[in-house]
Image (cartoon, rainbow, N blue to C red; front, side, top):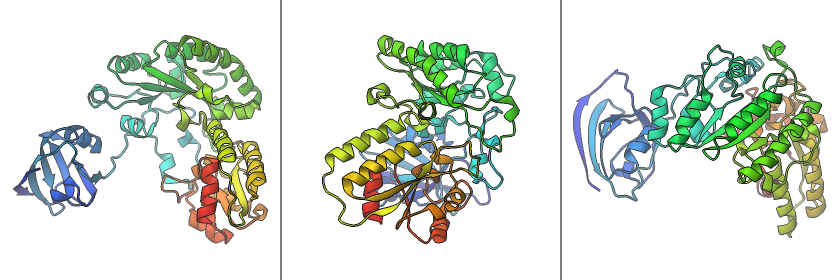
Length: 448
């Protein structure tokens, strides 16, 4: 590798574009180039950078690269680099500011937050980059031609799309706008250019269920395999929703009706496509009081992050844990494991089997959601205050909270209280439970 640093000018007090470096790995190509946190890379081979995805695309596969860099002190440099194929840049960049959604969806959770909620809950993102990186869903309603070309050029695949309904009039009602955006045309464009799509339908009783849902699912199935899968998840309404009058609450009977309607389609798709294709969210089965489908139903779990198949993965891991692990913990493990009311029956059964097998003393505890309202029963929407209100029911030497109840950093609850706050109030260790029984038991053995 060779490089040449050419000072060009010094810039002070000027706002610059590009991507700012926040970390440089020791021994990496970036370190050899003497790049430092605070430096900003403006362009690669003359192409201006909008974000770190641009950098990866422009600089990742090239063996001769010219970087335009502004140092943290304002000095501007040009670096000419000969890069070996296996060399790693070792650069970590500042994250981009997400693009905000232009829709006004009648079921949007940003309309349902209590005062004082975590700041990020109020931001409505609609960003193709977040869709590619994290599986966030976009509606594609305000997507520009430039963004569409970028997805194809940079192979930002797969993309996750909130379709909700292929009847454009119904979709406009759900999205809260008058725009008759032809989402199927955009999806076809991406599929024709090699971009995989995963779709989502947020199912709202009386609006996009019934015949509207049937049309939506069959329209999307006609685009398989490019349209890889579709998740059908139920509407959620909190006590703080500002447009409740436009919506009908999800009921247990309605969930049973949805299963009865969709199950024959799933069987047809398995025969015709070799794949279930249209998946119902776990919440629908749990609320209906019906068994979670078997492992074969979910294939490679393409919609796992949308709450589709998580319970099945949990149950499969439980079977594996009970079968494969022979030894018991060499210390007494006695504490309380919390979850939302929806998942409580499954957790209770799992902990009964774990206690019997490993001689642990784990008590399941169903937490009532008072922060968003008692109708919200999923574990991921429990707040620190909700946990604290159950302190009189906590038994044992530690308290386990659901993995999904804090932010990505693992410290902040939805009500802006922290795990440290909860630990201080309870006076016992607070442990995140992981996503599976194996993770739960391992953490209790190692962290407590």
